[in-house]
Image 1: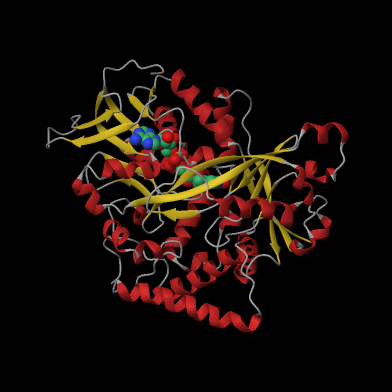
Image 2 (image 1 turned 180 degrees about the horizontal axis):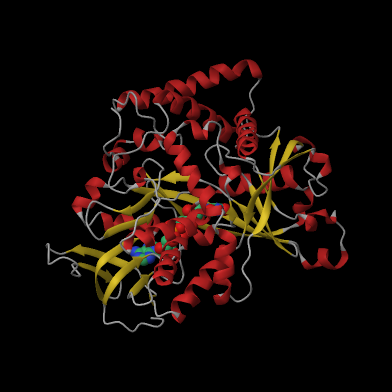
Length: 494
Ligand SMILES: Cc1cc2nc3c(=O)[nH]c(=O)nc-3n(C[C@H](O)[C@H](O)[C@H](O)COP(=O)(O)OP(=O)(O)OC[C@H]3O[C@@H](n4cnc5c(N)ncnc54)[C@H](O)[C@@H]3O)c2cc1C
């Protein structure tokens, strides 16, 4: 165990060594030099979300049409806006512990093209309007003016918008956190937490929680933070009171690809070399519930291509064929045909931590001393400096600016109204099916949408849900009886 010095009793135990777990340990230590802190997490990080991400600092390009019309979605978006403002300073400070200077490279191109659904065009219209209202600098470009944008004919872009979102390799950030931990007396346990026990009520402030590691070592604390993404559910399940009050975590599976240009191209050329000029993230917006195709340039002909997305009841250990197929096809069809010659390997799957309402679980639960830094879904890396800093303040007895609606012990938060959620499901599902090859003559479109609408209305009916909006990525968890029995939770409506 790297740097383990304490005798198994800590002021704070953080379970999880991803962006949230390590980021929290970092923020706690920055504020308190004497706190004893342990972070538990396996160095292989199999299934970890942070290491499966490219990653984008995704803020404006993540907004969906009408985001700020709904208070919960608006507050969710504000987490990314607030985090974005922290990243430059965060990198400067963390660079002291990194192998080289850490830096967010700012700039992202959002594409609209004929291969997307109308829902994508609406989202980009909304993003432009939201940025205009807030005075966020951006540029709407003619696709022809972007020199490296060379899609196939059928993927020709209609619009490219340059927004301020950025990119940074999350693996470098994790490495810097680890070096910080070792330098600043934070104990890192290269293991998994297998057991969580909460002792009887003891004198205030006593270490009544026991976390047992895979090797059998028992660690004690008064404050435990569940930051191991969806893996945390296995610990929650061991504490019935917690399981009853906190929305279940399911698995937001996603895989990406590491793409690189072969040596012969570097040496001899022979392709359109404009791929080497891609100077910023290039992406579509949300597509069928996934974060759109996105290419993150690492420089020198190396890229990350992301990412697939599906919310599952159980994790699958390998990427699905259709997920990788869509990514590869989009890369060549929609961004630059020269990628036809690129080499690739898969990254992931990683599991985005997704709560049963898709909103995050942040702060202390109703059980004193059990905290969550979790449920961040698909932009948790972006949000991490802000979330970790606010949660650290609270753990140390201060106040945080985090929205109280995302506290972990809560009812499920409605996704808009049921009516809007149903319409959004139909649009998102359509966008997803287009990606998988659906091609309908225009006259058949309304019939198709009706069929999908009827299907989802049946799920609402089956579960007696009238007003509550099920997030468009989750209806299958309500449809299947076994999943529903495990995932059902009090809802804020109905
Ligand atoms: C393919 C993909 C692409 C993404 N792209 C982006 C992006 O571009 N930008 C962005 O902001 N976000 C992105 N996300 C989302 C983002 O990665 C997550 O929201 C965020 O990383 C979650 O961080 P975390 O620390 O909560 O979870 P994780 O990174 O999953 O960390 C949890 C850690 O806990 C460890 N663990 C597991 N079991 C145990 C146990 N029993 N005990 C202790 N530790 C355990 C795991 O090994 C893991 O390292 C993406 C996610 C995926 C999957």
